Length: 172
Image 1: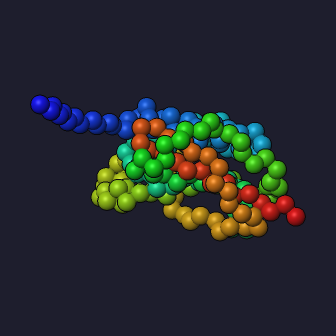
Image 2: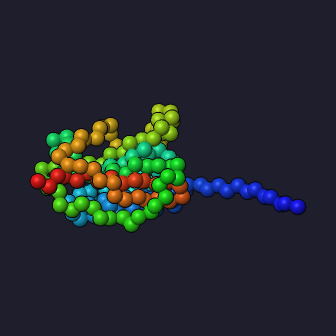
Image 3: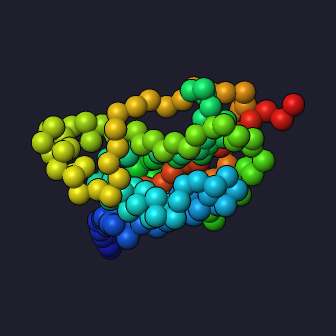
């Protein structure tokens, strides 16, 4: 006689999971502020709250912050969001590139939205945006400056993760 059994498991990505990932990105922003003077602590807190909410609801495709000059990246950190379980490493935050010349560069913070976000009605998107601590305007990312990309960190929780890439200036 052979006995078999089956079972189903399910998990939900909650605000707690989203805050875990957002806190690592916020820690990176904090280190950026220590190295380069921006963003401010209050901005970091607002960005972290916004990111956690948007991650929880599946509305983020990618997230990027850094410095640009003349429309080109000087140094930045980009986080590509994956919710398919392919990012399962959860590295410690930090190890940011600390030697970029940001003289004359401006800080930027950019969120790219997921297809789930664009599937909402205009009214639904407006409702979500009205409850966020950061009010974003339309814009576009800078192009690559004189430098290169390095994939360097992964942050994840409960099947959702981010793959971090750093744009570093060429050191010539």
